[in-house]
Length: 218
Image (cartoon, rainbow, N blue to C red; front, side, top):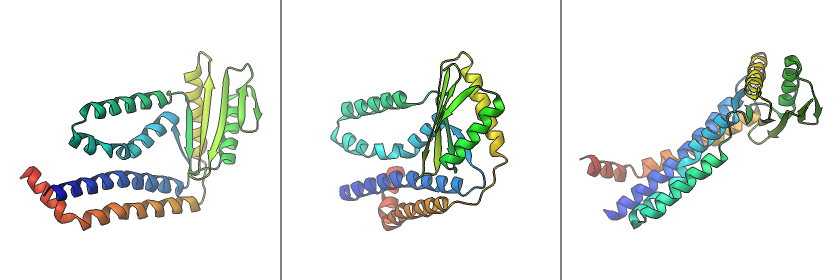
C-alpha cells in the first residue's frame, strides 16, 4: 500500500507540473494563431507565468512533509514569496504584446506616441522623452513571438500617460489583421504533445488513483 501511495503522489505531482505548462503553451499557441496581437501589462504577464509554473515548485513539498521537515518547508515558502514580490513588476513597469514581431510592435508604438503628441527621440528600439522624464525600450522574444515594452518614468502624471499609451495601442490593435503564424501552430502542437503525458500517466495508474481516492474519501 505504501509503495502504491508513493506512486500515486509521484503521478499527481507529474500531472500537476506538466498540465499547467501544456496549458500555457496551448494559450500562447492560440494567441499567436489569432488575427490580432494581444496586449497586457508586464505585471499581469508575470503573475500569469508564475501561476502556470508554480506547480513545478511544489515537487519538494511531499518529501519535506513525509520527512517532518516542516520548518524547512515553511522557510522555502517564505523565501519563494519574498522572491515573487521582489520580482513582481509594478503596475506601470510596462506592457507585453503577444503575436507580433519586434519590428511591427515598434512601428505601432511609434505611431501611438506620435498620435499622443509626445515630444522625444528614437534611438533604434529606444525612445526617450524630450526632457528625459520617460524612457521606453522595446525588446522582442522571437521564440514566443512577443515583445516587451519596458517603461521608466519619473513624471508626476506617469500613470495617466501609461494608461493613455495602453489605450492608444489597444485601439490600433483593433485595426490589425494578420494570418495565423507558424509559431502559433508549433506552440499548439507542443501544448497538445505535453498534455498527452499527464493523460497517459493517469490512464496508466488509474487503478492506483481510484484506490487512493477510495481510501481518502471512503
